[in-house]
Image (tube, rainbow, N blue to C red; front, top):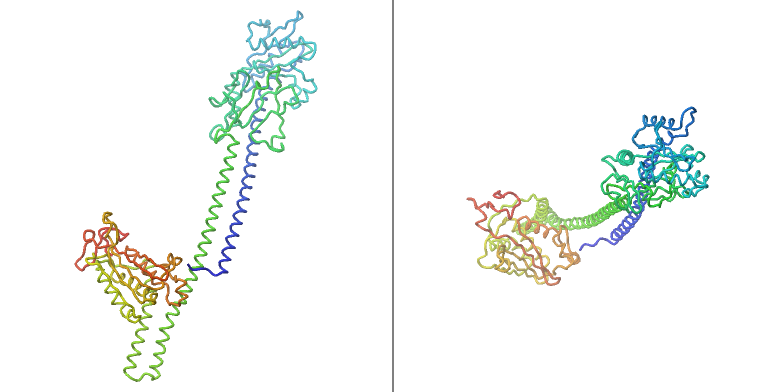
Length: 624
């Protein structure tokens, strides 16, 4: 493995530590920003929901208070109270948005004989018999009769008038005397000096079918319908569902409701805490702080759980609290993915930078090696030319000797240039191969003939082993020869210790029952030289790579021979592998596909036309 200089390694380590610190800091900041953003979103949604609920309540209060303002104390003289009340009721019905909201209006008065009489709000109508009254109205009349007969404040009103007025300070003076009864339902006003009551019976069907649905759509409407499920419920032993926007919603206790609000208040100082939403701010300084909640207090003391309550729950995405939590989790997930992408990008950048530095170093080593390889033959050629030009060489024998030396050095230069050009062509995929059936024995003999001069000069012993009756292989004759010659040259260069090489051709080993044994032929080149270390084996076919042991032994080379051989083997559809033990030599094995006459067709000149695509990625039967 090529190691970077110490300074470069320290720089890389510092970059990794800095990048890790930046990523950790960004992760902490992202977590805090996401938490703050989700909290702010929760507060904003809570304020919006609370504002919608208060506006819903104010609109309902406005519809009810219009009736109460209409039924003020009579002031005209010469006309009966009943007539004046009747005229005002008709006037209200002519202008009201929901004229059917009022079912009946009764005037309850105490007679001189003691019991109260119930007068309908119709001119010249006699008092009604209690038996003819609806049961809830009759029960309310009895409650009013009991209250008006009490010498002091009624039991149902334990709070003094001053405290009651302070509790409902935001109700106009004309409305402070009105109370709401949830059982009828009805609005009731008392005129204690005259022992007279105005009882306005409301039509619950109009509330359920018209007013409450309109209010729900007005204040909880989204782009595609209601954003919230809305219900008005009354608890107690028998749960009442006054209104529900969705079937089933409000039938039972809604534990995950996003908002709850008391529709009608209680005559106590604690009645102001009536709006509850899923998210409570630390200080009530949101948009709801400037809005006062107005309501009619209840007439009779009933259990708190029987109060009318507005209940809302977010329709899409579950309750808002869960929605905010999910949004926070999604934000954290997105932030984590972004940080992960950043980490991967930084890691890839560091790896790419390290590889680029290593490649640059390899290229510099390659330039140095090529310069050395060029300098030696050029120096020899230049010296020979100077000797010839200066007349030092004056005999025919000397000229022949100098010519041989110059020719040899020119061959060295040509070989170096050819290797570089071959590497460039195979690297860019421009190398074209003419495939034909080749005999393994002929291939080995041709390689030994081409490298015979180098073998004799290096004084190496060569062993040739070819199994009998080997099938032909598919390949390009020139390319296969170049690949094996590079392997032989490499063995001569690194096998100086034993000065022995072996070329062997055999079928691929394997179980005959598997069906793939013998489908390829292996041509191996072995030497008994210095071998390759385990750290260098994964990089031995990398361009420009030279092992540290080779550099230490000052063995000249460019680092292109094995890279070119590997690219040729891959280009021919074969493979090139290596097995080596440091100090015991190396074996490079070229595997080529055997020639199958059934899968190929030969033209008259011997060129192969492939009919199966196992060697080519182009369409079948393309001439290569």
